[in-house]
Structure formats: structure tokens, C-alpha cells
Amino acid sequence: YLHLPSLAFASLGVCASYIVGFALAAGCGVEMTHSVVDVAFEALTVWVWQLAMFYWADRALHISARQEVEAALGKCQGSAVSSLLELFCDAVADLDEHLVFKEHVVKLAGLLMHGVGKPLRGLPFIDFLATGEERQRFREFAEGDPAGDQEGRCPRMMKLRLRDGMGNFFDTVLYHMPYISVHGR
Image (cartoon, rainbow, N blue to C red; front, top):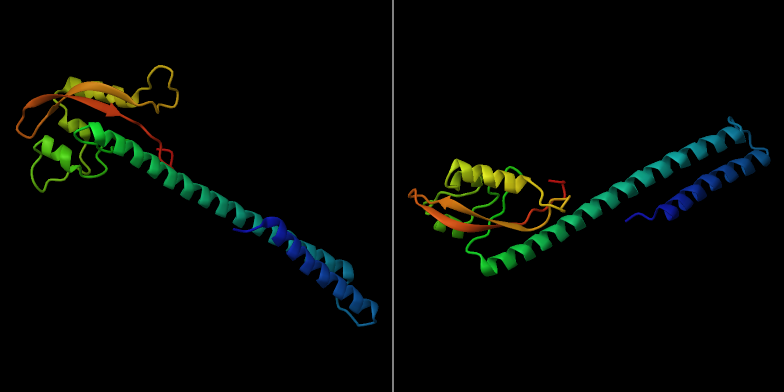
């Protein structure tokens, strides 16, 4: 972590000592090729550039640190929500913004009789819904905001039917907890 005022003060001190040293040398009769004003201007220009670089480095470190903290906090909150859901749900799955499985969910694959060695990761969740009507209802449910929830982060539920690997339909209740990642998705 950079402490900008300390770095700026130290840098200014170096520039000031350079200017004072040059002025003393000029005052002692040492022959100089540049005037004291030129040297002071160059030293202050260097100081301003250093100050700007310190500022941008400090800003970049702050942004990076904040993103790391937000990511860790989001991961912890997501883990807490998943742990709670796993207490009373048969399976818990994480979908991306395109409603595609982020990871393979063993319990859900078993419930859907998806088949051994066939991961769910990368597959669209809507492919497992019973009918086209169910798919449309789920899309509207997942993309729409409930009344009074402008940010779309309220947990919600809906009843729908899934289709297993044998073509059988079964009723289920889906709990939906949307969240926004660090990248705003």
C-alpha cells in the first residue's frame, strides 16, 4: 500500500535539496551551464510527474484491493446462500447470465438421470425443462424483476416441471437467488 502524502513529501524533499544544492554551488562561484531557474523548473517538473505516477499507482492498488475484497465477500455470501439452500433442497446449481450450468451438479444429474460421465457444466438449464411453455416461463422468471425489486436481487421461487433422461416429467419447486458478480454480471 502506497501512502501518497509521504511519497509526495519525500519526492519534494529530494527535488528541493537538488535545487538548494545547485543554488549554493552557483552562489559559491562554481561555474554552471544552467541557470538556477532552469534547474528549479526541471526539478519541479520531475516532482509533478512523480506525484502523478504515485497517484495512479495508488489508485490502481486501491481498485485492485477493493475488487479482491468484493470477490472474496461475494464468494463467501454465495457459499453461505448455497449452504442454506442445500439444507432443504435436493440439489443446488449455479447458472451464469445465459442460464447455463457453471459447474457439474452431481445431485441434479442423478435426479435428472442425466447419465454417468455426462457433466452438466456448459449445458443450458432450459434444456431440462419439460415443455416450450415451461422454458418461456422460466426465461421470463429469471430475467424479470419482481415488483419493488429494481436491482433484481430478491430471492424468488416458482413451480415448474423438469424432464429426466428417460423423458419423464416431474414437478419441482425452483428457488432463484440472483447475484451480481464483481464484473457486474
